[in-house]
Length: 316
Ligand SMILES: *[C@@H]1O[C@H](CO)[C@@H](O)[C@H](O)[C@H]1NC(C)=O
Image (cartoon, rainbow, N blue to C red; front, side, top):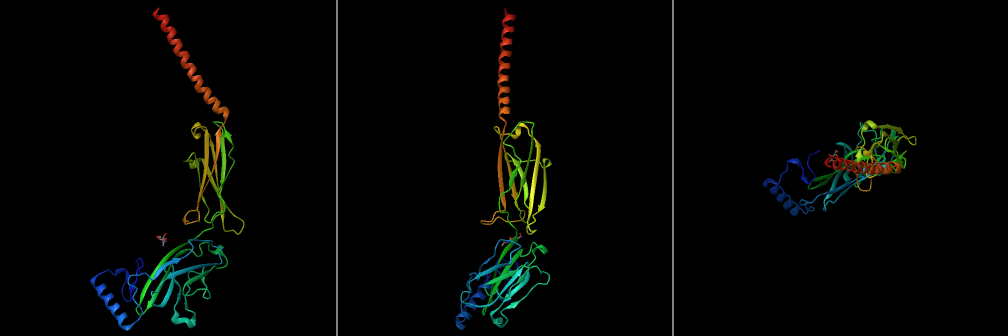
């Protein structure tokens, strides 16, 4: 594959090295002339052949099939071929001139996790079939796909790329358990956060009033979800002795955030979920706190009184 970001190119040239030089202009001009004189279609004139590769950004590895389509406009040219690659390995090639073979078909022996459906793949789309047992490879379908379109007489080629990531997104936000409605300072906070099953397993983080809890106070575990054995639940527990600084104006807000590592956030698909729950400082504690400050002022006043009395005694 050429390391260039698309654009049309001419047969025989190395796309990546073609610069808008005088030589290129001369070449283009002669090709335009040739096209005009021979009456063969028109040159794409800098227009892209391939508009985009439409692929799902996130695919469930249990999916029976996945359809990718290559959107292109030949600008009146004849299609010579459309070739599909995954991670630079050829997967499938369709060429109308090989129509008696329904196109031509490659399969990489070192990528046995995905099969190309020759019946459903054609000049516009590539249909991949799962291997029937996703447990053998939960990353089936994943990779960087490329579709390359070539025209004939004159020969042009162009391509587009798309990434596909396999994941099973959680069906709900994480659930916080064990948080009492209120606490006293010095009491133990024992809570847990359970993430809905996902693939890959969610990474969980706890925050108190927006500040990440020290990992020493937390413990994480993972359980393979029994249904289908595809997704895993993560659980994070927190155990810490509450101090006054854990309360902000008498409130402690515990937040649990679940993220799926390596899964992009695209459009509607979410891979970042948070749940929040709050607890308050016990009213007895709050009263005690008020009482403490009130007592403090009382002591202050009496001390001032004592000083004044002493002053009066000494002076007189
Ligand atoms: C595909 O993923 C690779 C590696 O993560 C990244 O460098 C590249 O930009 C992505 N391509 C597209 C079209 O998103």
